[in-house]
Length: 243
Image (cartoon, rainbow, N blue to C red; front, side, top):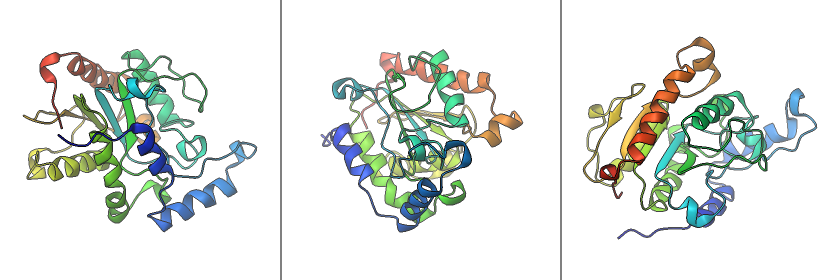
């Protein structure tokens, strides 16, 4: 039986991480320089922890894990909460609200009343990277946090990867745990779904970045359909998997 770490303790370790000097320097520089729109606002400027329910016992019972790419420079790197304070987060949480996975559509900042329902939100990298592109080494340095997040969710049933990099990071974790051998059997595509004998079902969606949402590559209905499928799966007792 794997060790089940506390999500609260895990978040403390995430926020204290200094493994990647390039990322830490970038986050601090962005927090110091700010952007005109937020020049009077404080910036978090540190690794961004997982976002989950406030009550630890409730958080550990989450059955859905959503995995993004990395914090936005002026979004989560500013607010200190995953997918919060930028248009990607607005798009994601509005769809999650419609799917019954959070209590409100808005995501402004910590303390805004947003509560997740049966869900934890994390990312492949916990620091905002230059150009929104973490290196392979930086993703590897963060992979332990994703692995520990899986360990902290004993009844996890579904993982939703937002974008190809998040999808690859999840597959790397599955491979380390012996659930995946060759990645070419699990190619990323929007709304793709992969089932496993002894691991949570893996769903895929395009990332709700402005590049995707402004061009119509990802519409609200497309994201809602994937989230509705996730909700359907976590409500199905037969889909339960222990990872």
